[in-house]
Image 1: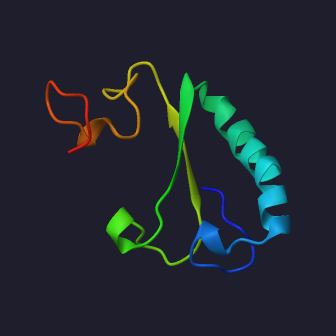
Image 2: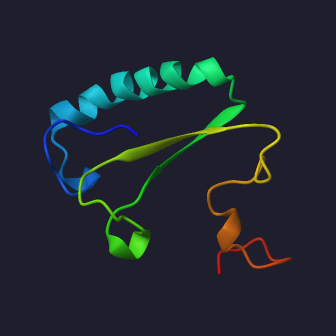
Length: 89
């Protein structure tokens, strides 16, 4: 996870400096995960309880993805798609 030092409940509350620092923090997270040789990454924000946010602090999920992962090749919305329709439920 990438988490700003200053407390805020969501990325919508981040200030300009925090947004400017985000690429460096994201690069550091990627560098840390490269030791596991991921095939890709999924990045995501959960903002508010309805979106799945359970911790009231801004945080960006950085998830390493691997070829042998059962969900490999499927995007973050795949579990929401209706069978045979390719559209969110």
